[in-house]
Amino acid sequence: MEASDFSRAESMSDFIESRSKLSAGPLHRPPIVSKKQIAFITVAILIWTSFFLKKLIAGNTVLHDKNIWMAGAIFVYFFSVSGAMFNIIRKMPMFLVDRNDPSKLVYFYQGSGMQLGTEGFAVGFLYTIVGLLLAFVTHVLFRVKNRTIQRLTMIIVLLVSFLAVKQVVFLDNWKTGYGIHAYWPSSWM
Image (tube, rainbow, N blue to C red; front, top):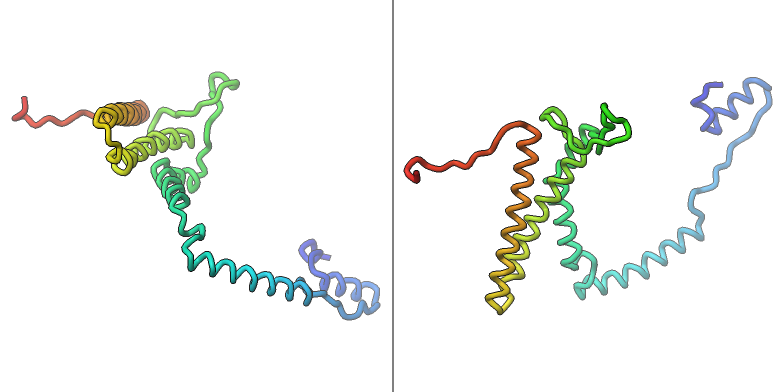
């Protein structure tokens, strides 16, 4: 008997009939879901539908919760800027074992030929910090009435954003060897 035929009852029955010349008879397969289970599932769906429609009409579902949408948007943003899709498609590891010292792990690989998962997550985290700070400044900070608190918070936000972008530029320079230089028009000199 073929190994692939073990999963089918008909194949086993045919094999036994061919070897022993005995009839195994018809095979009876019970349904996956019984009639009582179908009735229970139908009643449960009808009851659940009435509650769902009540919440839908009132605008009180998970789809109406702005916090769920914000968390989803932040996840999609982080997933996009961290290069996670690249890591999934190319099956990139999160880290490598150091060739010189096997007891150490390498999280950042120098050279533009390969990207480790932790590199993408680190850069994605830094980009996400800048994006969340920008969202905080544009959607929350203007509601604060005290101008001193607004200015102090804005200075802190700018400083943290500057340091995050500076770290991303540093990692890019370290990894690729290419330097990013500011462009100053010649008329400004």
